[in-house]
Every structure is written in structure tokens, then in C-alpha cells.
Image (cartoon, one colour):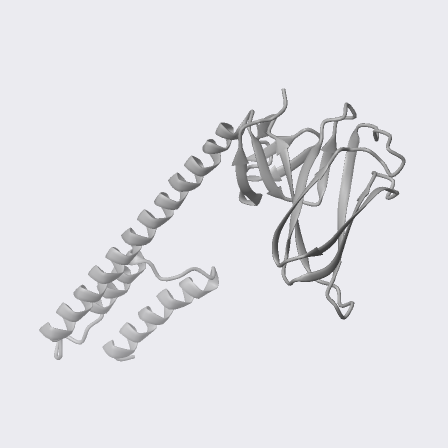
Length: 225
């Protein structure tokens, strides 16, 4: 076996050890490879100076990239922690979140909700359903332009009586002049009672409902006690 073959075999073993655990070659592995090449180089034709310098430069670049990657990872962790901890500042305020569900307290306090239309609508009907799926109130809003549409429900049913407390769901039936359904995004405003971190991320407690900070599209002073 020639010296060159020994060097090639040593290099192959290092590469195999990397591929076996599906990890990438880091700066320590690169250094081992460089040392292995130096130890097994042909004494009659040693590694040329420019080759050695080139490999050292490559090693330096690898080390710098690893350091940069670690720095970015640490920065992301810090930013995430700050982002999650800021969720406590929403307690006591009303937030507008992307959701079709809403809480009704049963005392007559209105529910502020709404939706975003992707096109102009010739006719819009909004239904509010209870937890059993029964529609308790229907509101005909007529024609609406593309964009944000605000809806305030006084929490009364179609007979003019207050609905009991609970979770209700809004459904929007919007269509253009040809009767083609129009897509929408439902939104609702609710007071933040607390923040739950048990799931590993900040979850806003909105009565019996929950929402993530990422779903917040607006923050307002609380209008309820």
C-alpha cells in the first residue's frame, strides 16, 4: 500500500464517520482531515506551500461561518424570548384577532367583530351560531366593497331576546353580482384576561377562547370591566 493510498483511506474514513450520523462537517472534523493529510503525505513529495495555505484559509472560513451561524441562532432565541414575554402587555386590553369564534357574556354587552372581503360583494349575510351549530341571528348587510367590514352584534337573537353566555361562531355569506361566493377573513375583538405559557409559546386567554400573538391584527383600550 502506497503512502498516497494511506492518506486517501484516512480521508475516506473521516468522511464515512460524518455521513453515518447524517451530520455536516464542522471545523473540528476539517482540522482532523487536514492533520490526517499532513501525517500521511508522501515525504518525497510533501504538500506544497500554496496548497497548505489554501487549506488553512478554507478552515478559517469554515470556523467563521460556524461562529456566525451560532450568533444568528442565539440572536433568534433572544428575539423569540422578548417577543413572547411582551405578550403580558396585552392583559386588560382588547385585541382584534383572526378568528370566527367569539365570547358572549349573556349580559347584553355587544360583540365587535368583522371580516375582510377579497372582492366587492353584491350581497352579504352574516350568521351567528351557538355551540350546537344553530343559527341564532342573521344580519343582511346588503352590498359591501372589498376590504374591511365592521359588524357589531348586540347579542340578541332573531326574536329580539338576549342569547345565553357561551361561544358563538360567525359565518359570512358573500357573493358578487353573478352569485359567485367571495372569500373572506373573519376577525373578532375580545379582552385579554391572561397569558398562558404552558404550551411552550405565549397563548392569549380570551375568556373561554385562545389566540396566539401572531393572530393579533389590532390592539385597543378595553371597553368592558
